[in-house]
Every structure is written in structure tokens, then in C-alpha cells.
Length: 279
Image (cartoon, rainbow, N blue to C red; front, side, top):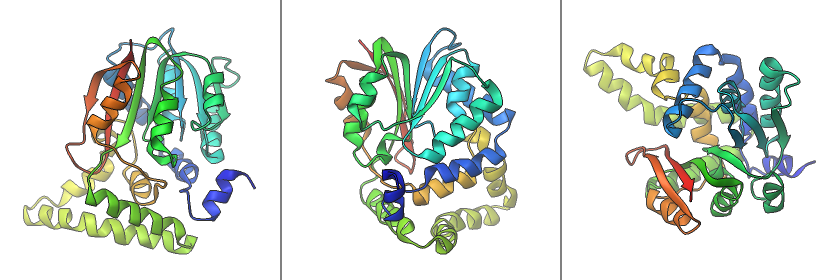
């Protein structure tokens, strides 16, 4: 049994790869194009042609695929074997036998491994580093393979104080439940969060607005994602750490990075997005 399987078995880690495998069932061209657009918009680039792109925690493989379609030479890795399998599936489906897209298993917490990868124009890690169990070491290691004047694009869960501590407890419980109880638990947890919104929409005679949150989520999330699979992640994603935007800024500033783009979640549940450039 590998370390990942052991952690899952002890209730210490969410099966991100299993969730991503289910997400791939709804992946289509529309979602891929949204992912491409979100990359270019946040990086303030018109193309990735000729760039090298490291995807740390590639998950479903969607953003590795997006980067490759935009012209980048891509290296993808993930700690979760099922996530690696998802990324390999997309590579085989869209870029079989392509030498400019490599997919491997690895951990961002392994500094020796990260250093062995070399240097990249763009290092990307969206919603990953806070799930490693050692977020600050993960961020430090993610900053290692960025070329001089290269870009580091990361997204980290926002620190909501007491609410974040509640989410930590919720996630811990989810991962310790037997499999048969996990889906009902998600429905209960998210029901308490979603029902007030549904009631408000009904009072305002807008019964279809909540439904559109599901059907139009690929666009409204700006990243081509799926509302249902994000819900599973929100409830189950563990380990779980958070940070305030200024903490991320200061942590990378002393490592020679300047902030070039920042999108916050305005104090709500979600990730703050950062793009840094290495001086």
C-alpha cells in the first residue's frame, strides 16, 4: 500500500482523484475553452506558445490540457495516483504520444524531486498546496522551479477565521465516515448552506436562478468547473489549510517575487488567486 492509500484509509486524506475521475464524465469542449481563457486572463498573456508550464497537482488534467492546447510544453505531476491517471487519460485522448507533455506521480513536499524538474516559465498550482498537509513548505517548494522573470500562479483557500476552523472540522468528519455515509453527509452540509439561497430566490420569484448556478457554473466559475464536483471538494477536501492574502504576499516577497495579479474571493468561501513574477 502506497502512502497515499494509507492516508486515505486512515481518514487523513480526501480522494481528490476519485472526484476528478467523475468530473471527467462531464468535461466537454466548452469547459476546456473556459479553462484556456481563465489561464490567459489571469496570466495576462495572449498565448503560451513557446512557454514551459509546470502543473503542480494536476488533478483532472484539465489545466494541463488547456496549457498544452495554448502552445506550452507541459510537465504535470500529482501525489494522488488517481489524479495522475485522470491527467494521463486526457493526454492520451488529446495528445497521445506527445513528447511535449509529460505526466508523472510526485509530491510537491519532496524538495529534491521538485528541484530535479528544472526551471519553467510558468508554474501553476490551483487549489492544491493547501491540501498537502504542509502548506507553507508546499508554497516554498512550488516557488523553486520558476525561471528568472517567470510566473508563479497559485490559488490558496481564504482564511475566514472561525468559519475556516468549522470547515476543517466538517472536512475531517467527512474523511472519517464510511463510504456509504459520505454522500448523505455532503447533502446535509451543503443543504444547510444552499437552502437559504433557494428560499430567497423563491421569495423574489426567481426560482430558476439557483438552477442556473448549476447549469451555468462552467461560465460563472470562470474555470470550466462543475458545481457538483466542487461541492464534493468543498466538503471533503482534506488536509485543509488557509491563509490571508497578505500572508501569501509577504511569504513570497522575501523569496524575490513581486505580485502582478490578485483576485480575491471577497472574504467568502473559496480561493484567493495570485500571480507572482520572480525578479
